[in-house]
Image (cartoon, rainbow over all chains, first blue to last red; front, side, top):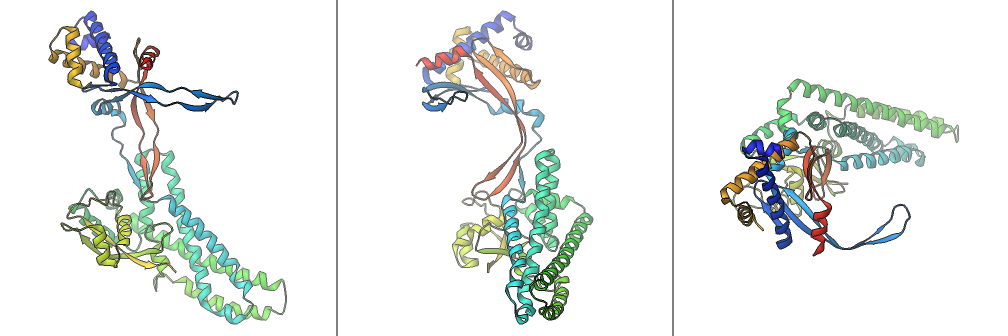
Length: 356
Length: 92
């Protein structure tokens, strides 16, 4: 109260009178029409609370809470900002990796385990085993979960850390994911920045700020890890053969020798699958996917600039043949309000393949 | 009751012009926020308590896009009405 009288150069008495009048008027206003709005300060409101049942925590008795009204206060925007001043530099951050990937990773890990344990013991005929097709599948699946598992670790950090740091951490997994496509991405992102800063994801800004060196290092690291995991996968798969086939009958050891060759041949296949031909799954792992969807995103088509009178559904129908694909565009560009995409927005168009 | 009505009523009671009343209200809210900024609790007898509370950062998920967002921590102003004010509002 004395602070008020000082700041306004008025007597204490006057300040007191003012406060009394102020609160009095608020009270009468609340009684009269339930809300009192004060400029630069906030809104007082009386809200009705309907009756509800509750349980007494100590006795476990059911008690009835009668309907009553309560006084709530919503501070004005300016007052809110003033109070929040110390924290005002923080902003809401979009996390690039979501829970779905976590779930996907678990599912993929399950599938990988099933694929590793099932096919070889079930098929006794050497012909089937020497067929490389199923084995390659086995090798490709384990790589996916491990790549995905690395990310959740990074994800956990931001919760504990300062948000400023966590922004960087959140942006990193995205970088490591986009190893091969990095350069094209940066080109596109730069275009995006100039054209439409609004739609631009924060990831891009971080990507651009980061020195190219660290990105290439990350890329090399991830490829090395993937290659190493492929090798481990092959060895584990080989052991499965030996263990399962040695125990039941020794006659089968001859088969084992036959099998050893295909496994080795297949190792070579696995060692350098990335430079040769990327399977759809591998391509898809570079992009964030829509969870539980029939279609996977395996690449990027020509970006599209929105014209006047064009809608996302129309665009989807034109490009993919069905308007249902609009949600892929929405997901891929992380559009927040699909009903209102400004003219001139550059959209990245996902290349889609049906899941097997 | 909107701001105009409020200021009108206030100026009548204080026997000042509405402009002066508005100036007083602005000064009041400024003083209030400067006191609250220091983390103080402001208690007004028979009316209520103004208090700054810290809200922790949290992760929210947009249900339609499944996008996860990290919401930063923030300080919010909370008001707790006094017992008398509560009773008064309950009388009706």
